[in-house]
Length: 337
Image 1 (cartoon, rainbow, N blue to C red):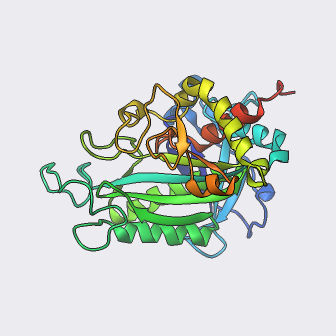
Image 2 (tube, rainbow, N blue to C red):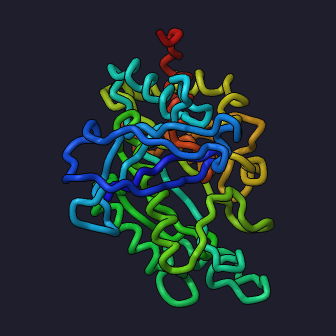
C-alpha cells in the first residue's frame, strides 16, 4: 500500500491509498495519480482534475512491512504547478543556491484539543487551568497532558526516517513542540509536512484534534510558532557572524513580505508579548526571545553558527518560509524556462 499525501487548498493534508504490485525502492517507480480538486479547494468543479506527482517517500509506521507514505506535489492539467504547490518554487530556489549548503531546523508547536474543541486537560465547560509556569517541559499529572499521543508521534517519525530531533511540553498546557532538522534545503519542508500528516493520523487514533492555530486561546497564554533556524556554509565557518549580521540587514526591509507568508492569524500572536516580537517591526538581538530574530548566545560567543527567525506562526507553510528566507538572503530566480 502506498499512501499518497498532498497539501490541500486550506493548508491541510489529504491522502488516499494506491495498491502497488511490488515493494517500491525509489520514488521514481511510483506513478502520477490524480484527485478531485474541487473537493479540496484546489480546482473548479468544471475542470476538477489535479495531478499528484510523488516527490518523497517514507516507510509507513502504521501499516509497517513494505507499505509506504508518499509525499506529492500538486499539478494542474496544463502542466503547471497548482497554485497551492509551494514546494516547486522552493525546490528551485534551494537548487539555485545549493552552493551555500543551507541547513534548516524548524520547531513545530501545536495544541491538542478534545472532541469539543477545548484543550485537553483543561476544566470542563471551557474552564481555565492555573496560570502558566509549571507546564513548560513539565512532568507529572496536572502539568502535562496527552503524552501518549506525543510519544507515539515521536516514535512514528523515527520509524519513518523523518529527521525529528526532539520533543518537549510547551508553556501553555496541552501545547507541545517537536523539532525537525537539521535538514538541507527542500528536505526540511518534506520532512515537516510528513510529520504533520503523522501527527494528525496518530491523534485520530486517540480521538484527539490537532490545531496549529498560532493563538488557539485568547488572553494571557502563549501562542504557537514555527521558529525557523537557519545556517549557511558561510555562517558556520570562522567569521560566520558577519554573514549572520549581513542576513539581518537583508531581512529587515522585507518584514511585510515575510509576514505575508508566515502564517494565518499571526497578528494575534506577534504582539510583542509572550516571548514574541511585534508584527509591525523587525528586531534582532543576541539571546533575545522578544526579538523577531534571535542570535543564540553560543553563536555570538563563537562568532559563527545560525540564527532563529521567531516570526513564523505554527500553521505556516515550511516551503514558503524556507523559500522566502533563501530568496531574501541569497536572491531570487530567473524566469522558469
